[in-house]
Length: 187
Image (cartoon, rainbow, N blue to C red; front, side, top):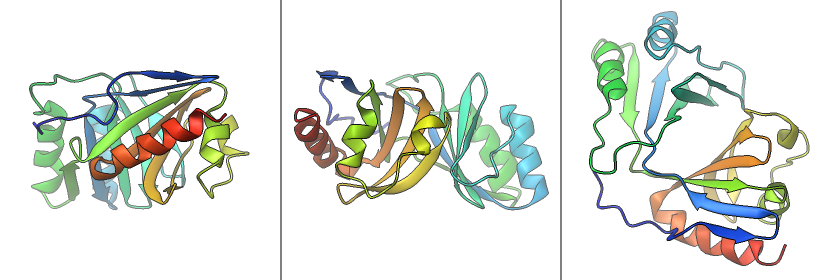
């Protein structure tokens, strides 16, 4: 596993907003198009991948976030082991998808940091640094989007009402947290 240095040292609380990192959280990038690909994924994670743009689907163990017509991110709903990033589901899917040329399975656990924002001022904060229109997004549990937040590429997943997960590349996470801390303190 990556020598892990977090940009978020502890949970931060602001007026109407709580910011914390969720780690380690398994994240897999899946790419494929065929019916066999979709069937194999569905059978092995007990969930149908979302096919509608900017949506997600969940099971007891995983959440699948739509990224493009042939790309998804599978995120574990459970915190993993900090000492080990070998995931059974990754090995299983790699053997059934990548090795059979149905598509690709890539572990992006260490590449992306997961920042959870919770509270009633989430969208007030996001609006200050993002061009995306959150009017419809904030009322749809499971909605997702890829956008820019303070000039940083992020994936935003509306996990549940008053709870949003941001997925950001590790190399930009410290800058993003600096912006979040500054902007949240002004809300």
